[in-house]
Image (cartoon, rainbow, N blue to C red):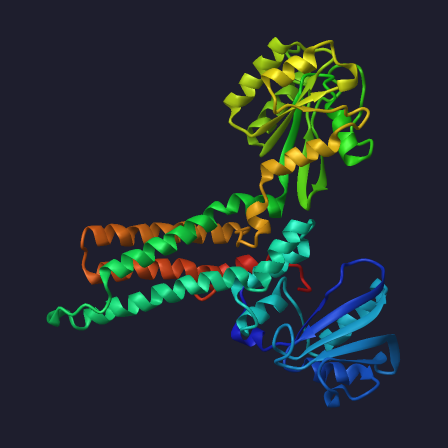
Length: 460
């Protein structure tokens, strides 16, 4: 989805609030003629004579026919979201009214907006850079405190300013090296190679920290896939129900009740966890249950965290140690959760604490020590870096550009080690600048913009 120069001159319109019946709906227009065209169908004050950032009551009419009583907000360029003239019409939330208003404006020369076109215009008009534009979509879809905070920080330019500072430092050295190419016969050095090495190493340190932050950023943005696993009747479904505070999963004393997996989300400490209740792990001749066990094993391999439940009323230490060894070989972070403390066999809890002091003891059925379990779960996510205000990368596109930047900077260091000529050094630095510029949109293509903004909703 790309826009021609003529399309960028169009006045566009879209419903900015969700589809469906509601108390009100907001219809948004943007473009040079947005206020003028609205004024032609609005009966009230002359909108073209009103100040920016004002709201006006009146009616929208199709000829003599009144479609609705509305409030019209006007924002005059460049003091608007898109830096164009913007109008927002608040109507009643009837789908009939919305459609009548949209059709009226289309007949008057306004074009229906494409997905993300308002935000793309804001980017193209210099309201913010590409990373900030992407953060708008992240902010809309944020469903937890941490994802909201990460998107807000990026939208306000925290990440962009850090990338821009890195580019500025590299640009200075590139210009000095390229200047040397004009004086190659004089053998003049405008850029100290030691200073260049120190700069590249310093930037590499920052870039690598940003790359490493993506694991945390991905957790913040998409949630933590957390598998609840264990033997049949260990209390997995009971734990899921207790964490969700609802009867999501069927609970039964009959082993093998859960044949597939059940999934739901819960926010713990501002982080979304996607808990997955799985089939009990055991050897079985039941074909359907065997499929469930196989799926459980696959889910465990791809999880970010495993809560492995031991039934204290029906498990011995030999079996527990055998399961722990299997989990350690799996290579996925896991918590040892001893369940049914109220029914524990004599001495097993004491022995388990001695051999595995990091075990968490709970009773899912009685909802005992669930807060302690949640605290331990949060410890493994490690949000300290995020909460201290450090920049966290949450976007896979940014992560990809940063890894390519790192490769280019490593090539610069290799070139310095091998004393390559200035033109090769300049080429590697320009590649690093290119990939950093891709993040903020200083280097871009129509295809890239089309891919990014096509994922936005129509009215944004």
